[in-house]
Length: 342
Image (cartoon, rainbow, N blue to C red; front, side):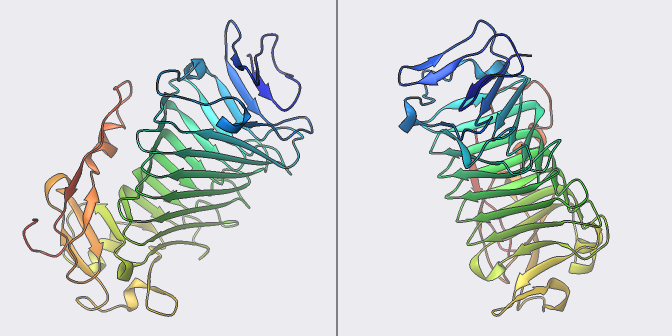
């Protein structure tokens, strides 16, 4: 197993590469990347003489394991992918903030920029240890992982904004006991979701998904607070235009929540605090309607009487299939008010 490491000595293989003012000096067989380790911070970004570009995505698609913030790194190790890069990592996993006391931050940003990891994982905040990790997906960028875990063993945070998308076939927010995972999705066109999503899997630690300002949370199968300890929530600010789409046809809130495993702890902003959705009033605080177009087969929880422009959830199912190529995204108007879509 070979590693590329910036900000420290390569410990795990014989072949390695370095990043400096001249850019990337690649090894014969690049099988891993470490950004920040062994008492150095380290960073990969355009300001340090290296950038991922549309014409030069580099051979990182063959990595086995990549770390941003590893071993004894101090400070914050950073990775930035931008410039319209389509970055495909077929066999490789990415861990952001691995070891205890280590902080890693990865930012994928810009229209046309994407990071996709098929048949592998993206871990934010530890994996075998208890590091701290942050994943920022911004400004129309796109990130997909077969398995996405925010807070596997440490503290993980994912921020999705500016019309960006973060998706996974399997998604875990808080995985091991004591870990903490949070996902914040904000802004019109911003999306988070997956095929199977678990928000809180343990009776210790915590998990949160918070959707605001016109963003969308779309999921096929959802569990909230699997440990049944009242420490995990899905917050949807319906008053700000945020929406929550759940696969299936449900005629009322009871049926909608009944399709969610665990504690079904969905909250809405009541103007002063986050309140349990069951305390709201249908037609006043929220509305439920069957989705149309590519949201056909989903039920959408939104503000009463709202009609929102939301992204295509159909690609969530497409990405569950191994080995398919890059799927381009489309947008459509979904009817979440019972009226015909414009």
